[in-house]
Image: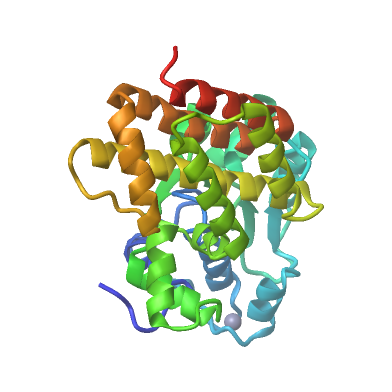
Length: 347
Ligand SMILES: [Zn+2]
């Protein structure tokens, strides 16, 4: 059920709030938690809200709420609270630096500056190297009194079992369309409810994804690609790779922005190929753009189902490599070459 008043600005995760409140009411606040769930559903926002509830100078732990107005709350929001530690992977880093983990472990042993808790939020948990994870184990096993560690990742499967087994795993679901639409309206990015709902459906439960897909340039490029992928004569993989690279660079100088754009594109093409499978099964594909249906029909008539599955998987694989920060140009080149080969029906 949707909560009209979001918990500390967090929407769509009432079930998780209720779960944590139950645990806290039982006097068993977990000292090491692992938040998992799709990207862009609000796990970071939730972790911050939880830290705020713990650090708020005016609220008791039993209520698991924050006032939002005291010095502690304001400092958490501004990212400057002395008892809130944050670790995330830098834009150019493949892994979380082991030294950052060692520093967090050390700082958690110190007395809180404000007399309450010390909270550490560790993002990108799947990029903990084995060495960094090992350095973390003792703290996760026996966190110093008054400390709470929140790890944030996408799936527990991508993490070392030794880390997962020491944490309480808290699962976040994709946001419901109505919640996502409400968030898009709150953010002021959608003009009206109808547009918010449309973008929310395409966002598949992720705010990040919905915002990225609201970019008209991405929509135009996606359309062009879909047409080429479905064209009878195939396409020139080298030329297409160059176009995708140029399109990625147009997202900005930051490599993170370029990667995000390629990931959105990969997700959209995977969705298109899934639409082709629907078409093959005689169903109406849930395509965001009606003109995709024509393209899906043409491909469904030409390719075996297994081949379409391979094509969709190849897009997800490209996404995986982009997340792992492989060389973007090489990922795109290999990806386009495979789409051209698999899409032509040859082996
Ligand atoms: Zn407060």
